[in-house]
Length: 345
Image (cartoon, rainbow, N blue to C red; front, side, top):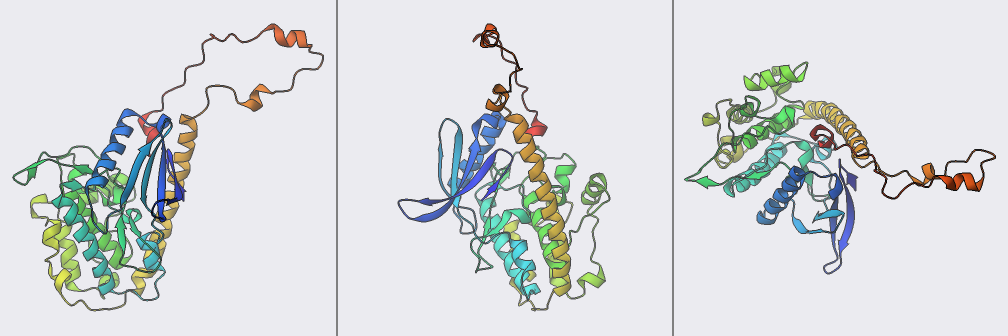
């Protein structure tokens, strides 16, 4: 079904229930202690959370070579891919999708889980029919915090995807649940106009714009979007964490509760198609890089059968061939440990 830096995903059937599932097979030999700890954290979180819009962990097992994560088999593809194929798409449909996402994040935050990597690639659809049956996936960067009186120790690990990362992460300040809320704002902006709110000629400029909350609403692209939707985005994309609403509070925002018009967003769909194509191209390039890194990390220390069966020189006798047998105790060349950069996706 797919592949990553050190894993492949296979389609399977659970024998007892005849349920179709996906099995992520993770190669142990390519994992560092940190990688294993991150995987175990992801499994622990998925075992604890139970929400209709969160990827369901069916089972987790291991053998000598692999870890196996058995999950829902999601056959509907990515949410953004489905949207760009729609013949009709309006603000009401976008709002309804956002409401599902906000409710899911509010549930996670209630259970002290921060996703930390909300982006279009992680919003999947369970099947090819129901556009509202969203599943939030990829909890590889998710973390669970310990709270006392509603407060937890600030997180400091820099993580996330550049276009969706919150300003407090870029500024290397302590952060928490509001980083997920910020990412929701970026996703909503893209859903309504077809391109991201923060841009730059390079990553440094992009991060500067994010840190200072520099974005706007081009009248040419936003004249058919309601004031309530823009207000919703502005409330979320607030640099001051203390003024940024919680996911639970967002569910009471007027845009979430009002009878939103069903004005067509056809121009946004056209722009979203272009944005989606660029995004998928970058994703494919990253996948190729990851596979090449995996080949480097897993290169064999012994010669391959082809190397061992190289043609002998003419006239070489069998006696000469057997003169220098390799000693069993001869030291093998030490394999270089892959760096953290090589291991990252």
